[in-house]
Length: 225
Image (tube, rainbow, N blue to C red; front, side, top):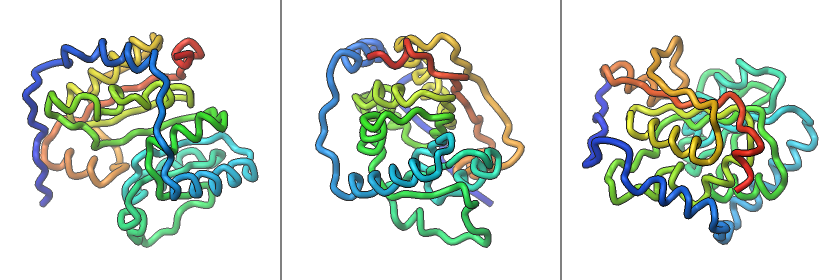
């Protein structure tokens, strides 16, 4: 039987400073030196993208790549790229091999998103499935939607889907999208028909509510910042 801690936070709703942080990030150019290992990893993947010439789907923070497998089978005509910073997680062995249209890469997400934006990538879909919450109020800027990389993430375009077990995280992500110019934002709870990640399985089987935040397509107006 799984056990999983419920997210606890000193926040009871959307962070009071969220809009201020979002606006600041929209007007400040993000600068961060790219780690060498991520630069090399991106160059290899970028060559593969050019070789395959297929629509690109990112599975960001893919962990053991269980979700990458599900996504690749669901969208066989696309190239699915699972990204995680942990070599140990990516090295987990499953009975089935990765589908032929899937690949995993060890990289820092912030650096990878930045490089993908610079390379002009336009995604078909982008999945961000669990954890990252940083539930302490003081850690707001570590959450993806309040991180300086968020405007670059949006420039990648495509259909974006976030999943989490923390309601406030989904609500904040949705507000960040709307503040960035995305009008067609959908949020809610869901019951998984199949478990795409080990976290999803653990959270659901311990009775936790699962939340999503989706944008059918990130419009150009949402990518201009």
